[in-house]
Length: 234
Length: 300
Image (cartoon, rainbow over all chains, first blue to last red):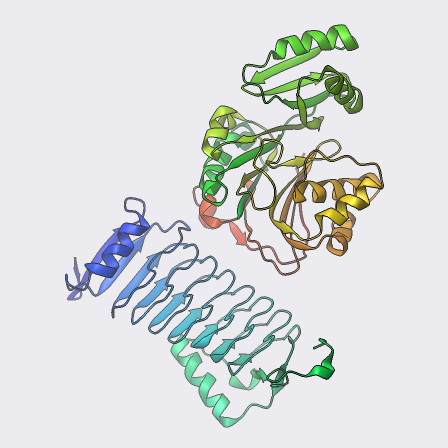
């Protein structure tokens, strides 16, 4: 169908399997000139819109399961509901936006692109992220940012226990309370560059919040080198 | 991987169709646990001294009526018996220990799956949808039920190793995860003269919790000591005569989702098995926090 001159296709997961939908998204949609995809009745199913590599918009109307938007390149995916574990896992570029809450491991090992969770994201949000940006409108659960290597995790609400455990060079910004820091994570002073960065990320995520509340959390880099005198206590 | 499910009906009408509602939840979780399955349902309690026993025989076509007749002649105990495939529900005025001793003496391989006043339990080896069909889950009625679909990772696939596990009366547990120290738990409990039916890690957790409660702990206190003593990954869902209790390990390694409305509390490993429930779009949907104890009680 045509909507405002843009070719749109509607795919109903109550009538078509996830495998067929993904196959269409991978192989047919671009040659058909489709630019917008509506995906209906996701009903918590896993692996929806995984592995896209085309500059389209996908609107998922409902709650989705595990791995939605995984390995995404170029596409802009919006989920109008909640998502299960590992949304946007290993995202490379483009964006994934969740209007509801996300379960564990949001954007795990994401290399690039933007992931926005408008609600809460539970434990291990941004685990091992490698360069993507994540903005969470609500709070994140325990062990978020665990071993995060590059990129930015912006949490507008609170952060759960052991935030940023074993951080590498990713930076975490928290607007609310931090329950506790993980090993080697520490609060650092906010610089003008930090304010500029979160200002830009919040704007791209569509959130309007006072920047002065945000705290910067980064690696103290004490785990970068083996310390024989630490006796395995960190 | 394994799947866990639980459903508590808050209203009488829903209790009449508990099985119908839980069946799609159960079928959906077959992907997480295709090798065996089980369900415990808590229905109207029989009055003491009567007890409900869920019995299981590995032998197809077992003579359950013969068992009821011998129970009358050997123990002077009149039993009502309802049979379905390899399973029988026996209601009789007898305590747990004398019945188990008698079954053992008779030596016919019949095992007690569950005992209590409210609990009825079915479990077997097969695809979960086949187990559900075999034991007529769709027709089950009751206040709440606790179910499991198993993908065995640490002990053999057999009807006895399927979940739910039981200990004591009107108490059962299903587990998604794997424990690191089941043998030290077993040694602790064997010193208290507790006996085990399998070498399964989840049975150790089930017996540990029920042992703590027999010592006088509330379920919250028992789980408090479980946080100290039980090491490993777990989402436990526990059913008692009037409660459903959910807890996840301190790392929340294994999933769980809760959907609650004024009609029901539904629990599953994954949201997709709750997606068919009436009113789920407006339900309070949340993920239980690590090391938090969630208790739902049956409304009168």
